Image (cartoon, rainbow, N blue to C red; front, side, top):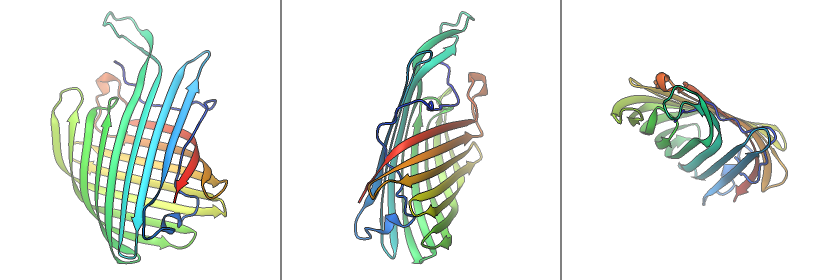
Length: 262
């Protein structure tokens, strides 16, 4: 089955329900003794001259106090669309309506603070993708983190450290194991009283592959619970099966309705 590289929700799609990071940059601090979080569901449908379906789900929870911060997240993407390819091997290109994206990811981290600006962290991430050069990628890492900016309106956090990755190649079934360097930069800025700009860059680099993901978003709150957010996600793998038509970079564009848990 051919594997399309880019999955774009169409501008005319209907988004039903989603949840995003709270519009206030300090929203995760509102419940220091308990968990707070967000849940997101986005549904995109297109009918007529073209046909496609796109469903994305996200959950993110965090708990924070003066010395520790714990976070958990999960996401899933599933899409169907019209795909062209030589499905029966006769050398003639055909078009089918079939699955074009199927991916989910689980991640978690814990950080121990020395002071408000510096911490040590441990993180883990697992990703499974039916339309990638890898059936799965699993990483664990340690890191040192520093808040370059930590004000009421702006946060700029960077983490870096060593880690370990296991991944299984989709075409051969071979399992790769290697040491990696993990880096993460998280930026949030309150543009206005109800508008927040955010950008998170994650890089996991090893001898077999370098994985990078960048999530850019801007959210506008309607009240304490609901907001609207436009997001652009770019994912990049340096080691891909080019012969199978897999590109190194995927992008995902979303417009979602937000719900914030307290």
